[in-house]
Image (cartoon, rainbow, N blue to C red; front, side, top):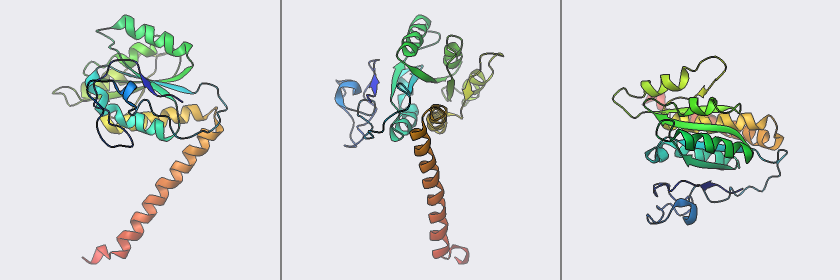
Length: 216
């Protein structure tokens, strides 16, 4: 499963294993950063192409959208990322949607701020599920992007997540749940992750009681 960025993004995505930034003169695609390394999972798929396409409205959004890529990689879901604007490059956006669908994309994740029409523009051009990540990018504190992503006309829904990094992570989890409807192995990985989360909460509770926190 190859994770790739086709747009010439700046090197703010860090290498996963080395914990250091990639060479700024080279794209993460060539340097082996977050979007190029294989997931490390060789699980067989019940669906040939269970792919996710992430679209960002600006290259400056990549740091905020990072949790989305991290969750997808953790779950072993192949994906790609592109930069395109609903307003500055509408033809490119339409072209990327057509190409992604032709390549087997099952779910689109779109992140944008301010007017934030990217998710809506993709929903207008595809009947595949579209997940929107509204980003804080103005003095309005993200409310402009949240409402722009959320308030879609009937028949063109966008599943709108919360703002910024929290929304980016949940966009990946939600995409995984959609894909898991046709992929039992992915569904099992999701169940395992839920169990691990529950176990972490229980462990935190045990540590709190062990510290006799209430009597401090």
